Image (cartoon, rainbow, N blue to C red; front, side, top):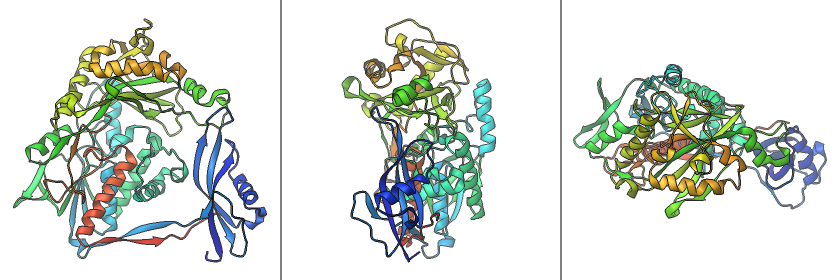
Length: 537
């Protein structure tokens, strides 16, 4: 396409539901050209602007092709359009190198995918089951409260994200984000994940992506071992040379530890093995449920009935006592509250949404900052802190029930009782949530929730469900600038469980980045090249 000039135009607007082909006419008018002068176009970015009192609209960035001989005026929001990628260069002898990836969540799957691009032999060890089997175990847990310790909402192929809203938003600026999103799109995520400012998959589409990623990895020779718990590092002459399982050692030249934030037993074993860990702050609190219609009204105002608008989201931020952050987390429009525990005598809640976010309710965690000094700075102290409150919730509500309270009652401004049923698969039972939370969490929530009403007026009429404790890892495995363990070279802790990510995309990027670092040390590298741009004419 060298005979064409490639530019991108930002700040184009369309009403919700309007056909995107109208963007070409707006782009032509902006450039003082005829419609027919534009030889091709491609949507690059799309975001919904619902600020203020005007009608919501989508704002676009559009890439267009123009004949080289056409002149355009110098105007704002127009820039050259070029796309690049960085291609892995295999290290010498890559086919003889062996890597073990522990965990088949986002960090593990994308670490494995990156390793195959370097030509390295890969084994993926997952303590849980393949996704289709895991889904049956999760359904049994939600239906009858029968927990399978190694196959549940947290553990198994796909990681915890397989039962979430499937958000792909991230603050990570790393160029590998584009590589991750492109692979998700190609695996069934769809083109929308490449253009939407707040892309999400939903549980159904995310499971499709996981299945297709696994199929791609298998086609590249990756070996998967499910129901395989890694209990220790395999050391030879003081060096990490693999991992140990019940079946014996699995040898490797590098180990990519990509477990999730709930792998408590492995954390204990790592400390015993002398791996350096440090306490890390996290957040805990409750999950707030509101009618989705109330959220739509708060965010869209008079336009909340527009049929082309998506279910609205919200972001809430306040300060609690001692200056602690209090904020919404993992907001699920049209979603469901789900039990998400990993221990039979503990209650944990989370949220998830389907691809269409079509449920009657919205839910979001409202959590309070927990600092390392709150649990004594012990690297494993955060685990014990979480467990204490999860068990308190279980003992209060009983097996197969979730403790809950209306916001107004929690704030001492009423005595309305919760309804037994909400979006959750387990019944709710009325409990004093104040007794199931640390004092600083309780008081911070009581301080922040009334202020949050200023943005979402229906907050006071919502229901609080407890407890939300697994927002992120309560410890961090310390690592060098080259991303290997500070105490154990050849061990690469990555993703959420290592304390270096906070979502699907950031975990996947972290896994890929660690692979790049190891392969660079092995003599490989990355080469930048410009992509051929494909557009619709």
